[in-house]
Length: 282
Image (cartoon, rainbow, N blue to C red; front, side, top):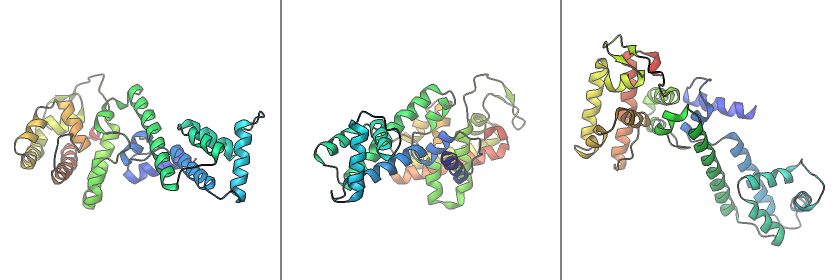
């Protein structure tokens, strides 16, 4: 129930349909799974308890429970001590428990918080990359958005609240775009051309959106007259589309130039797709 609410809130914040893949929606906001969030709270609480003075009742109860769960022969499957041992093992933090039980030493609050966040993030990254490697729905998405970093369109919307609708449109497009394996040709009723993918056609090749496309390229030239525009121009259609949908680039740009490019991409995608009014684009 908690996980379902977490996923619903993530989609609601971005204005995405309820049937959108939850793992994609979470990554667009830069959120980790609800499981990792709960584990983080438990680990931080465990750290605070371990740093209490020995005379504290909570400390002595936890120590007794840990010893029983760790060393005694009988099976203890329930309780906070068993739960925390499983979490520490899962995230590779068992050495801190061993150190605590052996000599009573435990990291400071700031150190433990940093260790917990780093360990949880690394495990989530491994799970995410495994999911992208085996799930065909991520063939296109993994080239558009990296893991657990807020999408550039959402960062633009924070700085420019008036284009929140455009930003939500971009993120929904990133979630819904898929690799076209059937290559069914569709006739565009605006320009008369046949196309395979509606999003690629709307953004890169439709004659009906040529004015928006020309405006975009003129703006790109203004950012960096030669090198950046050449860099984009040398990309294949798929690479260029993914770059525009990501609203970001790996090209070395100054912060102001990168923000300008992010803003341009958000408006360009929204204007191009809305011109065609083709629901297959989003």
